[in-house]
Image (cartoon, rainbow, N blue to C red; front, side):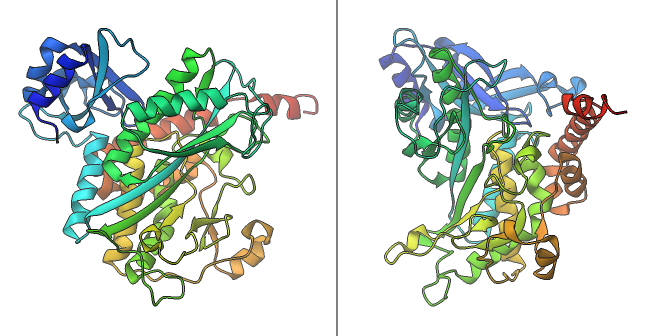
Amino acid sequence: MLSKEEILKLVQDNDVEFIRLWFTDINGILKSFSIGKDELEGALTDGMGFDGSSITGFQDIEESDMIAMPDPNTFAILPWRPEQKAVARMICDILQPGGKPYEGDPRYVLKRQLAKMKKLGFDHFYVGPELEYFYFKSSSGTEILDEGGYFDLTPLDMASNLRRDTIFAMRKLGIRVEYSHHEVAPSQHEIDMRYDDALKMADDMVTYRLTVKEIASANGVYATFMPKPIFGQNGSGMHCHQSLFKGKTNAFYEKADKYHLSKIGKAYIAGILKHAPEIVSILAPWVNSYKRLVPGYEAPVYIAWSRRNRSALVRVPMYQPGKEAATRMELRCPDPSGNPYLQLAVMLSAGLRGVEEEYKLGDPMELNLYHLTDEERAERGIKSLPASLGEAIHKTEKSELVRETLGDHTFERFIELKKKEWDEFRIQVTEYELKKYLPIL
């Protein structure tokens, strides 16, 4: 943890003039306000007050006073701003007047789950999310930059320099990058961050999304994390690798097991599978998310696990000798458009519920689940994720696990917002309907 004095010295040494204070609303949209360097010492001690009534999912107007308390560990200089009179950012915890954590702060929701994890005897929740996105020529349409496909190289991939500049910026912001590449769809890309502790990773995820957009904008193009912007092409997912550690020991690994999974690892996966229908509205939180979650297009909808089969909801990468620490599970239904703090919180909560109650994990499904008929899947007991936001919210609304994870405040506001979104979508008359029905009815 950096001390107040160390941060003030960094500001002085790097000619930092302004500090942007960041936090997210309930939907994961980044919010920010700026303070001058002269205000920083006071902000680090007492926080900065702001009106929470205008932030989606936050307070009502009669109780709107909130405090943004900068987290010293998140201090970083923004590389897309000038080096002279530079601009830094700090991610904030949101407090109530008096200093008590605000229960509607998404970052606090994740912190609560991490505290519960530690009470259960685990020290780390490591996550490695893979956020995919598209580059388009502008925000007003889906005109692509390239016709590239998976792992394609220049000249098909016109965005290599965009990814390169983005990676340099991410490194300056303290984010470790493993690799980057062109994804399956035209103009679709992925930059993978090296796994890290969940809170650091959630901070890095919101930073990554903004960095991708800033570098794109500086080069005259638009980057989007919209899950399914192009009909007939793969959507953008966020496969999320995860594991629990006790100290330096991977709690998911068991040498004697034929799958090299411990009892804890199996129970965690079983928890994810059992509660997936309840939490998917947070993992895939928009109407558009369910245009991606359809059979095919590498988007998993069938609730099963496997080792090499990417049609299952959960994949456990095959064990390699000497790589015990890499034992993990990969959840394949989340998308990169949601609130990272809430997404990681509900995944951890579902997995820990499995561990606490010793859920049993069935056998893996190693055949291609897309090729089975509905009857064949039913015979094997394979169920599907909700097919729409409306269906997903209906399941979440009944979920004791999600209410406990989010807390009453966030849970009720989330349900209210998503019901409203679904109703707004449901009453639209789309171009598809006009083309299909108007000429014949």
